[in-house]
Image (cartoon, rainbow over all chains, first blue to last red; front, top):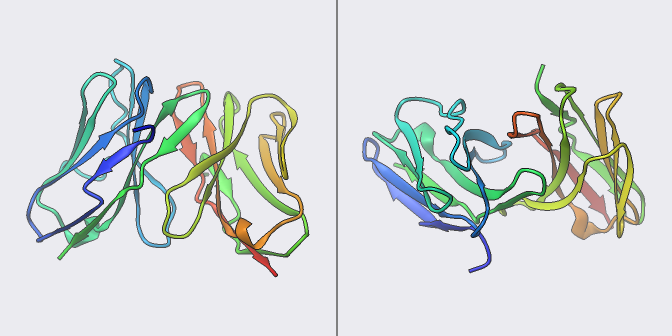
Length: 112
Length: 110
C-alpha cells in the first residue's frame, strides 16, 4: 500500500501481559518515529530511527518499552508487563527529515 | 522551556475569518518547520512545510517563518467549519529529529 500501515488497529490486553505493535513504513522512507498519544493529549515522543544510525531512545518511558527496526523497513514496539497507564494510541510515522512525515492510523491499546 | 511551544487554545473564529496559529522554538539551529492538522480521533496529517524566512502560500494556508525571532505561524484564510481541528507545529533541528508542539485547537463557528 501507499501509506504507513500499523497493526493491530486495536488491542485489548490484560495487565501484566506483553504486547507487540507493528509498523510498516512507506518504502524508501529512511526515518521512522513512534509516538504515544493519550486521550486529549499531545504527541509523546518515544523513539526515532534514522537509516543505519543508532536509534534515539530518549523518549521511552521505562525499560518495559523497547523497539526495533530492520534496516529501513518494518518496526516493532514491544511493551512488557503492561500497566493501565500504558493505555493510549500508539502512532508510527515515517518520512524523510526534510519533507515531513506520514502517520499511520495508530494502534489503540487498552490495558484492563 | 519546551523545545516547541504553542498556545493550547482553544482558538475560536467565525466562518470566513482568518485564523492565526503561532509557534515558537528554542533551538536556533533548527532547519525545517512543519504544520500538521489532526482531526479528533484521527492521525496527524502534514499540511505545510517551510525552510526559508518569509511566507509560503498553499491555497488558503500561509506559513510564515522568522528565524531571527524563532517564530513560525500558520494563517488560514476564509476559515471553514471543516478547518476545526488541532494544529501541530513540528521543528526539525540540526540533529535531524523533529519535535512536535502540543498543538492548538481551532474551532471555526458557522
